[in-house]
Length: 437
Image (cartoon, rainbow, N blue to C red; front, top):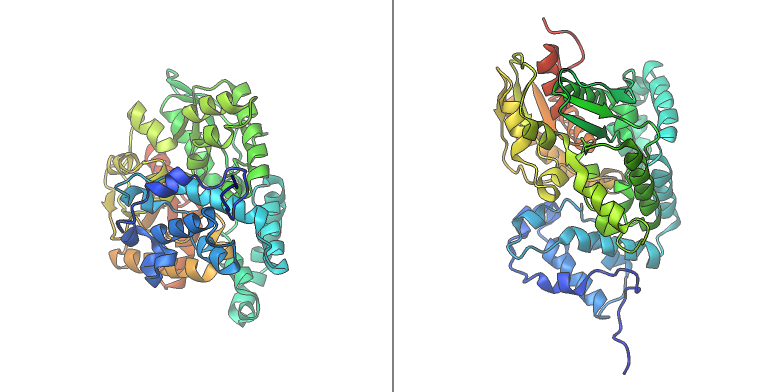
């Protein structure tokens, strides 16, 4: 009896049972960012699942055209919220991308670009060097000159995308290895610091540690913790991602914490999946499940604890933007809204298409910048008419992506993490970096 032909290799191909779970009902179509933009069936969740099925059944090879439809998926998993059949599209797209990276031969340019991203962004030590280079670029006036002269137009789109997304450099805020709880200790929590956030948005981590401390948590932030591997997993780079997952588990097991707190939606969804990712590793499979069970978004922890610290007024109009993985993968929607609504004087504003991705999506805005900009500009057009004082969200990629789009649209608006507003209210300070009047 001959084996069934398939375009995939034998190492964790997309699960045929998950593929067959899709009944092609179409509920996912209006939830999919790329289908919303282009209206093409092959660029919808059910269309991509059909492409996976064709490859699984040996009806197509992994061709450049086939790969393009998978590459243009943001992996935002909005379709999972919309799906009445409960198809775990996230596991399907990640397994498919891992197959592509093993079996498909990308162009030299594409391979070089991805290699550069994966050598940089999961490495906080290298990001710190980039911080110094970016600081020199901005403070020397070179950035202003480059932007005003039109030189950027001569650069490749992906380089322009990186330059546009670069945050304004501010002094890094140090996070203590242990931040004591204020008052009676309620929890001992471990804080994941992230990669880009650790080096370029350290104020978010500082606000997280202060807020948790004010609410009675002893906060442990091991400086030796690595990247969680989210960017690599979502891009199909399985082997290095699993190595980082093992290191992360080792670090926080030694920390002996009650809860591991994340403050980035993409990282949070990845660490919750460690049990699945390390299912084949006899030394880590059970440990990964225990670790994942301890992981929670900071807004979940604060909502469960209930407020203890006094909230001072913040008279601000704030648009809340849901991070895709926070709302669709982790199902965290009500907690950040409840925490923000409890701040005196803060007016919380909802916008339409709240379930649609802003275009950040890990490294998506760096490998698919044109599509990412289309989605970001669409998001900015929905935010700007509300004339908010700030936009709040729960993911560093969203912060940079939406901030760049609002600036591009002529409506520059501070984009902050939800925790920064809570921290500012507790400290009676400005969330934008200067003392309140």
